Every structure is written in structure tokens, then in C-alpha cells.
Amino acid sequence: MTPDIALILTVDGLANGAIYLLAGLGLVLIFSVTRVVFVPFGDIAAFTALTLAAFQMQRVPGTIGLVAVLAAVASLMELGAAIRRRSADGLAQRIAGYGLLPLIPCALAWLIAARDVPEIVRIPVALGLALPMGPLLDRIAFRPIADASVLVLLIVAIALHFAIAGLGLLFFGPEGFRTTALVDGIFELPGGLVITGQLILMMASAVLLAVLFFLFFERSLIGKALRATAVNRTGARLVGIRPERTGVTAYLIASALAGISGILIGPSTTIYYDSGFLIGLKAFVGAIIGGLVSYPVTALGALFVGVMESFASFFSSAMKEVVVFSLLIPVLLWRSLALAHGGDEEHEELDG
Image (cartoon, rainbow, N blue to C red; front, side):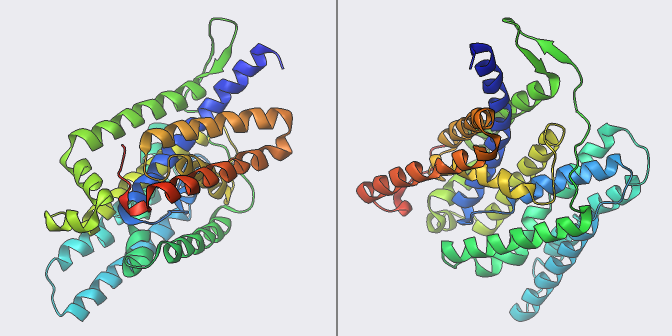
């Protein structure tokens, strides 16, 4: 391997790592606030890319029906909960949030699906369909068992992934799709390194969103409420923070990160109905490196995973997944030893 090839592989790995970085931040955010390892995160990213591809082919994506059905089920569950409580306080607000707001992007998507509209219209509509998916899945699948163990929540998350992947096969078929590049152009950097505009956009977007993510948690009241809930749910409740509301906020932010990840990775990788699992799993490796609590270490771990995957695919593309997931073994051993000497996870604090 020459230095030029190593440099090219590093740049390509950092671009893929940028996607895993966004996904890793979303996974850590949801886990720290709700204790859920949100396996369907990658599925939301894949659905966003496939939805955008369907728009570009002027087809009606099945994502519209999925979001509408989830909204209807969540609304019925809210209605049932109000009947059991024998109180309608806040019911209208919850029905509007879970039932009516998600229908707005559904209606917009249905209007533009079969029409030749500019790309600048398709992208926000595809992203708008991804936004309600996380909060709706939370309301339907995780909220009723919020006090269950982490293992039970993980099993439910895995079951959700298989259900969503099956729906993806039904909606989009077994063939893969690539969306058109968001940025055209090829640039030559000093040293003769050639890089596409799409790769630059992927890395720049990840850096920008990571900075905004940091500022959101450090400077905003909502971000501080999320951090307080992550550190101690009971303490947060005692000072007036509602864990359910912070949970919805965490799922909403994570859905936005998943949607952006899908839109960014769509032009550079062929996305299939089940591609979300690999995206989420590689991001999960980065999140495990960060102990599912540290945003900065998770970001570095995700970039490391991307670079390792790039080099592994150069030497043996068939073994690249094995190399990446083998990283979990030493990391898990190290985390187990650290926990054995440093107490249980309840005493860990959020570093971000």
C-alpha cells in the first residue's frame, strides 16, 4: 500500500465515519435518556434514503402509509389511556402531537410524490417523514414498558427492527437504490488527492451538526433538561423535568439525525430495505467505545470504525464487516473490566 492509497482510504473512511458519528450520537442520546438501545435508528435512516429515491423516480413511497398508521395507533393509545384515567386533561394536545402533526408531512409527500419537483423540495419532505417515526415508535412500543429492564427494551427494539425491515421489503422491494448526488464536482487537493463534493458535504455536515449538538446541550434549557434526565431520572423529576417529554425530545432529535444520515449516505452507497441494520450496528460499535454515555468518545469511535472499515475493504471486502464487528470484543472486555473496578452504570455521568 502506497501513502497515496492510504490517504484516499483515510478520507473515504472519515466520510463513512461521519455518518456513523451522527448515528452514534443519536443512539447515545436515546439510551442515556430512555435506556433504550434504539436498534431501528438505522432503519429510519434507510427509509429516508429510500423515500427520497422513490420521490426521484416519481413514485409514492410506502413510508407515507407507515407514518399515517403509526400516528393513528398512537392516537388510539392516547385515547385509551385517557379513558382508563377517566380524565381528558391534555388529551387534545397529545392527539394533535401524535395524530395530526405527523399527517402534515404525509400530505406533503403524497402531493409531490408523482410530480416533477425540484430536489430542494423533495429533501425536506423526505426528512419530514422521518421526524415523527422515532417519537411514534416510542409512544407505541417503548412508553408502555418504560420501567422494564434494559434487556427487555433491547428485545423489543430488535423486534421492531425486523418488523420495519419487513415493511421496507414490502414498500421498496429487494433491489437497492442510490439517490442523486447532493453536490456535483470533483476537487483536487494539494498532494494530488482527488475528492468528490459529496464526500466533502458528508464530512462538513457531520462537523457542523456535532458542533450544534454540543451547543444545544451546553447552552439551551432543553439540552440541560436532557442531560439532567440522563444523569438521574428521579432527580430530574423532583426538579420539575418530565422524563416523558425529554424522551420525546430525544427521539425527535435522533430521528432528525437518522434522516440527515440517510440523505447524506444515499448518493454514495446503494441502500437496500435492510441496510439500516448495518448502519446502526456500526454506529453502535462507536457508541460502545464511548460507553453509551460519552458523546466525544462516541464521535471519535465512530470515525475510527469508518477508517477501519475503509482499510479492511481494501485488503478484503468480504471480511470488512468481520473486522469492524471484531472491534466489539476488546472494547467490551475493556468496558467490563472498567465497570468491575469502577462501580455500576448507574453512577456514570454524561460527559457530553
